[in-house]
Image 1: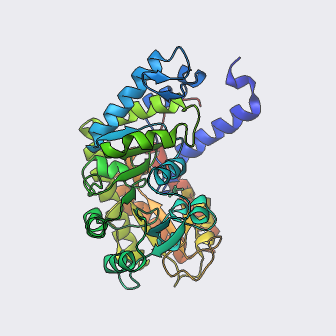
Image 2: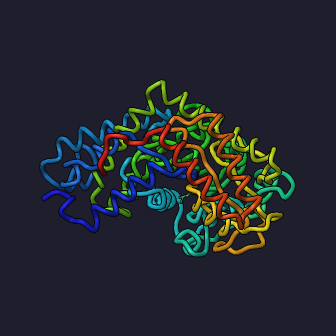
Length: 413
Ligand code: DSN
């Protein structure tokens, strides 16, 4: 039976393909994978249990799974210059759970970036396992510069003597100084964990400082700037490899999703191709152009610009909240997400921020001219949020622009 026999699912999937094709995807954590990655992800690899690791499985018939997982591991190690890679985490959150449990125990103290300043739920938020299991000391950004206050990080580490320092962010537009984190961690003899989920593709391409020389353990998702399938990945030093593997399986997962492991292998292969460096550099150039266009139109940006793929709009002086801005941009075919900004007076359901990111549109082939156009549309919409005719006009322009940069032109689903 084909999926077209299951009409409710088929229709929703077709509608989603059209939505992706006809709108501007500016969510900073999203991207469009290649046909090859999708083929691996929707393959026979989904039919098999492969608990264990290559050569050491708890099920028979795993020889081809061994080949593929070993390829994914070798490619991840080569891509990041790491000693060891575990490619099995189902997600970034699971990767973080396994990484924490390889280094610390419940009740341990962690020093991590505050969610409200751009950190991640799994870095100690009270509503997440990390905030429930660990005693969390948050650090944040400087009120003037909106950059991570490294002096404060050092002082907090000295004062609180955490069992682990966590670096990494979900809504931070500036380069993270992993060398500075590494220095603090080394001087105070505290292990360092880096969650590079947002910037993994930039790190792989060498356009963002790599955490590999400085961190004991590094986690990431594979689907953001790295442009792979949805999933997680952990890198670590050789000395931590055995324990880490046991914390992933059987520690917090059973059978790995081998179709995703296969898709990760394909994506890592793509990221090893020299063309990926040009892609990652273009992501940053596009973000800079988008940021400059918005700044020229008087839109405030957190930290005043960007060094990476993220542009974070500060709407505190605007007539619309983050939630309202997300909705009106969506009605013009521009997909974004509301986001808390540092020192935000609004709750997470409202927010005073909009987070934009350029990885997906860069994959579509859009460049600086398109970023100027899109920045102008966003500024126009935010300047006249009640003007629904303007939103309609821009929606038509967005559809035309998307038509010039076809996405999956031969796909039906
Ligand atoms: N939810 C992701 C993001 O959008 O940044 C982080 O995991």
